[in-house]
Length: 409
Image: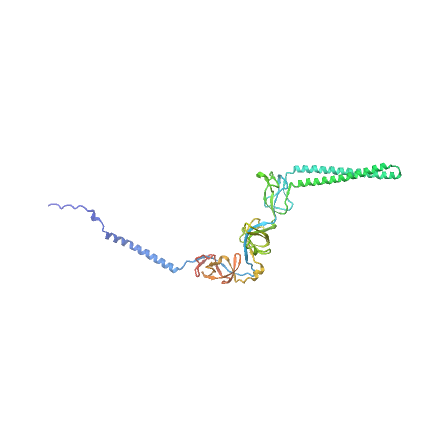
């Protein structure tokens, strides 16, 4: 019996046809696609049911309008300046031997701030005093001699009257007395000159002692013992021109530059409110003291000086300050009556219309308002809003009428 031939394996018989392969892939991905579609549909429905997202805002309450409140007519900035400030210097050139002042020290008028080396000046004063003493002694001698000459003259006259003394003796006695009188006049003039020279020498000696010209606070110490000081600047930078700078703290005032186009709004006696850059939440009442009658052609400004209505230790020289000039009392009385006051941050301009957003039950209501006077950080509302209403501060651009919000105040 003959065996049947053995069939060799064919790799083509193992291949999967395209129809079977694609059908299987579709069957595997179909459940996943249906799940993703269901989740997306549920998410969209949930978002639609929740509505628009609430906008976080901060709010403030509209205050009742204050009777007699003054509006700001002009704003300017400047610095705190003392009317009396002096860099105390020596009248002569000399070497510093002692400095008795420190920064921040309170000094009185005439108080010694420093001393210079006065050895040479003291010697000159002693020599001048000695010359004065010599002149005084010479005067005393002449006065004694004159008194003796006058006694001799009186005796000679008596003897001449009795016929005992001759006329020549009388003339000699008279001449001697007259000569001593003349010498006495010269001696007195010499003594006066010596006294004047001594006064000059003592004044020169006093110039080596540096004193405060007025009471105040020392804000700088410009020289140290051993340094040279001079009333004029010397080359090389090795000679100081000042000892210390003294400021009269009772003379502090405000100096601001006002644009010359707005200077008509400022008059002496006008009230103002000053805000120091160091204390932005502290408003200090001030009054216009004077308007300097000249303009700066480079800056087109006019200087205005204001006095603080009440000084405070926190106010320091050269501090930056912003000044809000207030309207006068008669102008404030003539202004329309306001319904309330709101922060300037609550007011927004929408296409030329002034609006605020009032908060009612976590929903904002857009309200058109009519503005009154500018009162610095606040503004008057003449119509459109009542006192006690809650308004949104810094309303974002996307905030619209009826939008839900969350109050973060």
